[in-house]
Length: 270
Image 1 (spheres, rainbow, N blue to C red):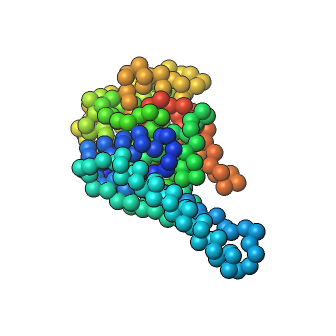
Image 2 (image 1 turned 45 degrees about the horizontal axis):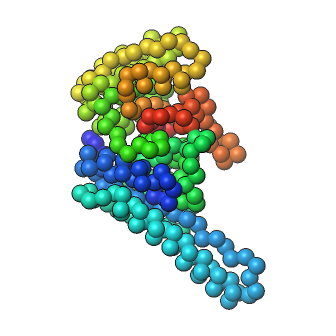
Image 3 (image 1 turned 90 degrees about the vertical axis):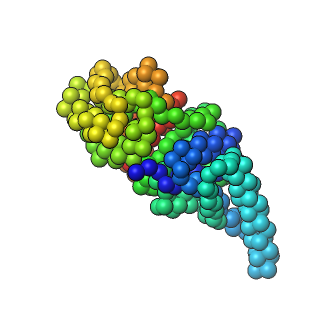
C-alpha cells in the first residue's frame, strides 16, 4: 500500500512553489495523483445603497476572488510540472474548511510550517494546526525552502499512544524504502513504551530499523531534533497531541516545538 492521492494547498505565498514541487515529487515517487486545493471566502457587500447595489458589489467581489483563485491554480499547474496526474479543487469558502473537506479523499496532506518568523501566505494560506486536528489524515509539515524529501533516514518519535500508532502506519510507504529508520523514545520509562516491538513490526514490513532510547531530558522536542540531525535524518514521524479550547486548536510539548521550529519535514497524525 502506498499513497494514491496527495493533497496540497495552493496559495500565493513565497512558500507555495517549494511546497507544490515537493508534493509533486512525492506524487511521482508513489505514482499518485496530486490534488491542488484553494479557497477564499467572498466578502459580503457593505455600505450598499439598495438591493441592486448589493447584488452588483457581490458580483464584483466574487470576480475579484475568482481572479485570485485562478492565480493559485496557475501557480499549482506551473510548479507541479509534467509527468503526473493532477486534479484541482477550488471553492468560495474558508481555506482550512475546504482543505479539510478535500482531505476525505486523500492519503496524505502536505502543508508548510507556520512558526514564529515564517511568512504569512495571505488569505489562501492554511496553517498546519487546524488541518492536523480536523482532517483525520496524515499531514506532512515541511519547513521553508525545502523542495525535495528523500526520506532515506527517518526518526520515529515513539510514544505508545494512539496518535503515534496511526503515524507509524501512515508512514509505512516511506519507511519501506528508507535506508535507515530509528524508533526513538525519550524519558526514564522509554524501555516500557514498546519501541522494540514497533521496530520488529516495521522490520516485518521490510524497513531497516533499530530502536534507540534517548537521554532523559526536560526538553523532549530539542532532544529529538538533536538526535535526528545527528543521524542526518530528513523526516521525523510522530503523533500530534492537542486539545480544543474556544474553537482554537492548542498544542503543547513536542508537537508545538516541531510545528514551530523543526528544520526537518515532520509527518504527523492526530
